[in-house]
Structures are given as C-alpha cells and as structure tokens.
Length: 390
Image (cartoon, rainbow, N blue to C red):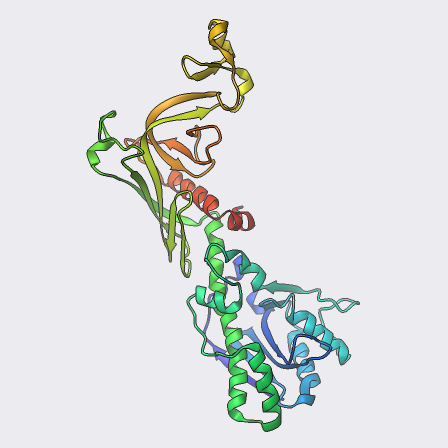
C-alpha cells in the first residue's frame, strides 16, 4: 500500500459558519471499483487534516487487489481521533460504503454504535450547498459544478468509471503514469472540497451583520422631477424612475447573484446593488380589520364605523377585504414584503407593494440595511428560510 503526504495552502474554512472545529475534523474522499459494497471494493482514500498551523493531504492507495483490508485498517486508525468527518455526498455513499466494507473485514471502527452506524458528527457539503442550485443557476449540484461556481478549475479530467478501469489496469501493470492519474483525481476531489467551502459566504448574506454600508440615489429622466409635485415630468408608470441602493457586504461572495423578480438585486464579490422601481401616482392602503370599516362608493374609499355612522345609510355599505382601503397620491417605491408600513398596493390581491418615498428625508444606515436584508429574504426565499437570521 502506498501512502503519500502533501502540505496544502491554507484555505478559508468557514468553520464557524458550517459548525465544525478544524483541529477536530477530517476531510475525506474515497474511490471504489463500483457502487455496490457487496461487489466492489475501496482502492483509494484521501484525507485532509489540520496539523498545528498547516493542512496535510494524505492519500492511501491499495496498489494491489488484496490490499483493501490494510488500507481500511490504516484509514480508520488514523481517523479515530477526529470528531467530525467532512465529505461531499458521503452521507449517501462514502460513509455507508466504508462501514459496510469494515464489517466485511471485521474491522472495529471508532465512532460507531452497536449496530455499526456512524454516531460522530458528519458534515456533508453536498447537503450544505444544494440550496444554491437555483440562485446560482446551476444545472446540476455535483462537486464539479460547485467548484466552478467557487471559481476553481481542477487539473483532473477523469470520471468515476474511468477511475475504476484505470485501477484494474494499474493493479496488473503498476504503471506509474496510471498511479499519477489515480492519485490526481482523488487529490482534486479533496482540494475541490476546500475550494467550495467559500460558497459558505452565501450563508453570511443572511447573518445579522451581513450588510456593512449602503448609499441611496434616485435616477430618472430629470432631477427636477423630484420636487414640485404635481408636474408633467414627475415619475409615473410611463416614465420609469429607480431608487438605487448600493451596498457593501461584510464578507464577499465568490461569484455573482442576480435576480430581477420582483425587483433587481445583484451581488458580485462584496458589492451589491438593489434597484427598486418607483413612480408618482395613486395607490391604496388596505386596512386589515375590514369588519370595523364601511365602504363609501361615492368617495371610493373606506372609513371607520365610528365615522361612517355619520353618513347616510344609502351611501355606505359594509367593507370587504377588497374595498377596505384609502387612496393616496405620492411618490412610491416598490418594496420587499414587510419592509415598511403602511404598505400600498394597486389592488387587494396585488403581489407587489410600495412604500411612500420622501426625497427630502434621506434614509439612514439602519433603514438602508433593513431594506437590503428584506430584499435578500424575498429574492432568495429558500436560502432565507434555511439560513435565516438569528
């Protein structure tokens, strides 16, 4: 059996975000001759572990078909001190396969219960980053796709099937070039795991201190249109205006996030831009407790029952959720759901809501930060639900 070691560069491990301690954790990846643990075997295992102030990549290669047991015993002995195993989709494949092969050879495994199930902490990077498929517009959530999303490209080009064929050839010939290719594939699988850890920065978008700073500007046909309402050139639905909020993140993301529904939000590195459509016109505020209101058809708005009592009964009817509103003409900006009240809409069932914008009152940093956080939550609801702020 061949055992190799290599010192690798320090990498940003995001252990606080992902919930593991570097000194107590072991990255690992296995190569097998097939998918069935009853018919296939393990021929190569790679690990990365923290040693003092450096990371060490170790590979265990069975150079002959009868060295699997020796390889497994060495791996489990070296893995015993670690409290967390870190892997990519190892929950579904690597761990069950290793434990099944250990039972086959009656190898005792530290960290399993009486039934042979893994009981130590296990961190599956596939499970951690699978929610990024839609926001990052990934066709597949495999390690190669995530490596590309993190901006890293491996040297290895082999597939799993090619690895199996190569190993069978190597076991017969001990060709050093085949050995190099086998080790390179496993090496890049391991190194790739350290690279995709940078994707944990997307989780920090939903951390309490995600947004560091922000500034706001309004853009449209003419600056004079911001004052002196009403005027022909004021922003309307036919003359689009935008509230543009630029902001900086406390931690940069490795790629680009972009969404244009229901508003535009883009993030590249540590820089973000939120663009909210705005217009000058009429919108409605709908009262939630409609049973306490009456609708006045001639006025086309609702009033509280205490006021409606003074109106002739022929000119008032009980309000419904759809008619329990007051109208307002102002400069409105589209807003993320729940950002500001009162929230104005065109109709009761309108999905889009707006807040009234007063250009003479600049937004302070807490307000900007809150607005951006609400925009992030609405733009990426699956991530916000999974990685909600605490």
